[in-house]
Image (cartoon, rainbow, N blue to C red; front, side):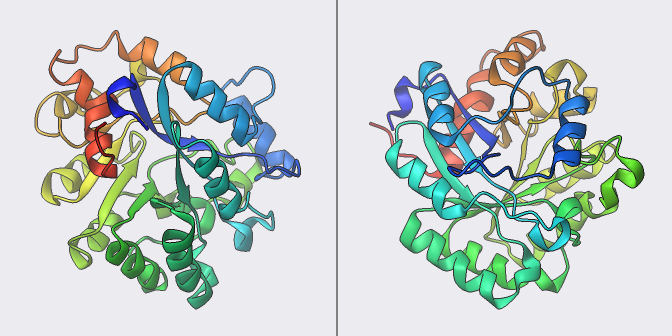
Amino acid sequence: MNIDELTAIDVHTHAEVSSKGAASLDEDLYAASGAYFKVEGDRKPTLEEMAAYYRERKMAAVVFTVDAEAATGTEPVPNEEVAEAAAANPDVLIPFASLDPHRGRAAVKRARRLVEEHGVRGFKFHPSIQGFFPDDRLAYGLYEVIEETGAIALFHTGQTGIGAGVPGGGGIRLKYSNPLYVDDVAADFPHLKIILAHPSFPWQDEALAVATHKPGVHIDLSGWSPKYFPPQLVKYANSLLQDKVLFGSDYPVLTPDRWLADFAQLPIKDEVRPKILKENAARLLGLPRA
C-alpha cells in the first residue's frame, strides 16, 4: 500500500455478503436498512468487487463484518474471509474483524489468532445489535487482547439504520450505543486505540467529550452525509479534534463518492481536510510511507 498515492482512507466499510452468497443480515433487516439509507439497486458487492471499487478511486478501505449471531441468528461473513481478501488486495483493503462478546473465552482466543495469524488490524463492535453495554465486563477479555496486540477497537455509536422502521426496531435497542459507555473502556484500557463510529446522534456532545478527554479515542464520520453533521461536530473537527477525526463512508449503504461530494461543501480548513481524509487514519493504523 503506497500511502502517498492514495487520495483517502475510508475507515468504515462493510462486507455484507460472503463468497458463498450468504448475507450478513436477514431479509427484513436488510430491506429496512436499505430503505433507511435510500440505497438504490443492489448493495451486496463481493470483497473482490469492493477492492476494485476502491482501487479505481485510489482509496484504501478498512473492511469488516459484524458478528451478532447470538442476537440475530444470522451468521456473519467469516472474519477469515475478510482477512484473506485483504491479503489478496493489500494495496486497498485493510482487514478488521468482529467478534460477539457473548462468545466468551472462545472469542478471546480467536481474537488473538485473527491478529497474529491473519493480520487483522482492528475489531468492530456494534453494541446495539450485539446487545451489550461497552463497559460490560463481558467484553473486557477481548479488549485486553486488542490493547495488547496494538489493534483498534471500533464501536458503533448513536442511532442505527439497522432495524429502523421494523416493528419494535427489530428488537434492537439504541441505549447500548451511547458513547459515554466507551469512556469507561478508555479509562480501564488507557493504551487501547478506540474509534467512535458515526456522528453519535443523539449523543454527539458525549462523543466529543470522550474524544477530547481520552487520548486514545478517535471519531469516524461514517454513516451520515456530511451536510447533516451537527455544527458542534464540524467545529471540533476543525479545531480541537482535527488530529482525531477520520473519514468513513459506511459503504455500501453510503458511497464515498456521495460522502466526499458533500464533505467538499463543509467549511473545513485547508490544512485540516487532508488530516481527516487520510493522514489521521494512516497514523492511527500505523501504515508505513513508501
